[in-house]
Each structure stands twice: as C-alpha cells, then as structure tokens.
Amino acid sequence: MCIAPLLLALSATTQAPFTVGPLTVRPGEARSGFLEVPAARDSGTRIPITVVRGRDPGPVLALVAGTHGSEIAPVLALHRVRRELDPARLRGTVILVHVANMPSFLGRTIYYSPIDGKNLNRVYPGAADGTVSQRIAFAITRDVIARADYLVDMHAGDANESLRPYTYWSKLGLDPRVDSLSREMALAWGNEYIVVDTNRPRDPAASVYTQNTAQTRGKPSITTEIGYLGIPAEDMIAKNVESAFRLLRALGMWPGPVERVARPIWLERTEVLRSPGAGVWTPRVERGQQVAAGTVIGVLTDFFGDQPTEIRAPFAGIVLYIVATPAMNAGEPVAMIGQ
Ligand SMILES: [Zn+2]
Image 1 (cartoon, protein in one colour):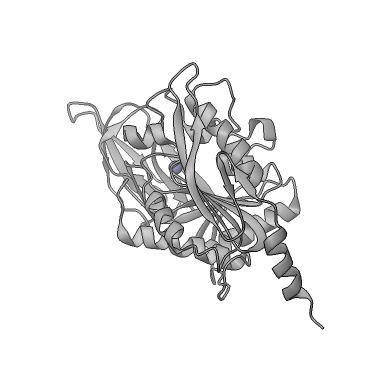
Image 2 (cartoon, helix red, strand yellow):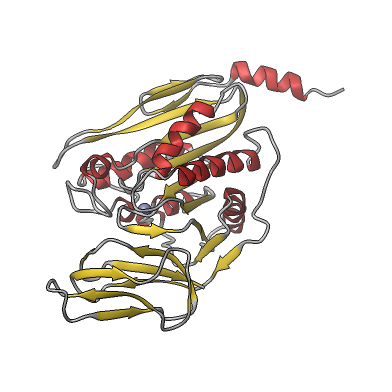
C-alpha cells in the first residue's frame, strides 16, 4: 500500500506558515508586499517581493532580479513568473525579489546606487548600520537568502552592456555537494555558455556577491545573464521565464519534463577587459562574436575624438558582452571575453 498521497495531504494542512518579512503565506497561497529598508545614515528604500507557496511541501527557491537596477529583462520576466506560478501546481515555495535595488532602478543608474555610489553586488552580506546598498544586502541576506534552499541571482547586460546569455557557475570548493548541485542548476537553467568561476570569496562574512552569500551558506546557487542594454527585449524576457520554469522542473517543484543543456560550453578562461582611461568608447565587435587573439574589440578616444587607443582581445574566444555606449571611465569594463 502506498502512503505517500496520505502523507502529502496531511502535510499540506499541517505545514506551518512561511514568513518572509511582512508576508506570512500558507500552503496554496501567494502574497506580494515589500521588505522595508528604513532610512538610517542615508535614505531608506523598499524591496518588492512575492512569495508563492505550493499546496505540497518542497524546497524554497529564491529568484532575485534587479540587483543592478537597469538590468531589466529579469525584472519583467518575474512579473510573468508571478502570474504563471499557480500554487495548486507548485511543490515547495518560490520567493521572487522583483527589484532588489530600487534606488538604482528608479534612478536609472548602471553599476552603482545613486544614493551611496556602491555596487549592490559587491557589498554582501551587507550591514544593518551601513549605507543603503549595505542595508539592502543585509535585508536580502536575512529575509531571502536565509530562508531559501536554492538561489538564482538574475542579471542581464546593464544599460551600457550588449550581452549574449550566459551563466556563472561558482566552483567554490567549500562543499562538493553544493558545488555539484549548483552545476546542475546551471545546466537546468538553459544557457549554453557557462563561466566556471573559481575565484569567489569563501568567507561567509565577506561573501561580496548575492549568489556567493547563498553558496557560502550551503545553498546551491547560480548567477545568470540574459538580456542587454537595459531594454525589455521580448525574446530575452521569454528566455528568463523559460529558464525559471526549467529550473523549477529540475528541482521537482513544477510538473513536466526535466531538461538539461545538451552541449554546455564551459568557459574556463574569461577576462573582463577594462578601459585604460576616461573618454569616448566605440565598440568594434558584437555580443556573441567569436574573436581571434589580437582582434580590436573597440577604440577609446579622448573627448575631442583624438588619441585613439585600441583595446584588443588577449586570447581567442567569444564576446560575452561588449560595452555599446560611448561614455567610459578609467578602469571600467569595456568587454568580457570567454574561452
Ligand atoms: Zn548585473
């Protein structure tokens, strides 16, 4: 005799409520609201979240969009995921962070917060008494990452970055199980190009990145990149939605066949090329283009259009992203190449 259905039926009614910030969600319910980040040494903000709780128990998956406020395709994608995630079909719980970095989203900034000038994806796990980016990181660490079993930090090309889709798999080396499950998540997500990152910090108290905060806390996680130039391109929105449901199926949280990337392209060597100075940037390659060692990636001139400096590919590979807008500061990325 099979007792599984009886156990599931019991657990659906006896599961304790699941609370994230101000939201208390029972099995079979979905709720949206805000994590408040109160004003302190600088302005406060709020983080729009949705918690969808399946009728049946299962893992908790956090999907985070808008860590960089102008990386838009994932933000729009989570609206669709929210509409399509029927609690009656879901097993487990999904926490959607719709816009992690509201100051940057509303301020239309790239990389940095308009309030404190910090990059949210460099200040984790945050600080309760820090500036607003640090307090956002602190709230997400405490209310989202601590509650999740799995996490995806969903990025895209920022408003200046023409990007082709890829995923970061962090091979951290702290826990083989977590590394291996993170690898499976990368294969489930669906991007063929997967950057193998072995350089992320291993100290949970100085985890720096959203994804790495989860991983150093024993939670399998990936960072994904789908979308470009800060625009809501329909195919990029749809690809983010498709990836989210591919992962839900792989985690056993959503009905349907499990798909893995059939022929992943592991990028063991990557380099972010940086600008030698401030000036006016003209790209010479497209996102996704294969380049040879020495190919001119783009040209930096001074503010009069003179003194051209060519930036060349250091090795043969694929252009994962290329900065496609002219403003350029010293030391900022101009492109990322992977091999
Ligand atoms: Zn980003």
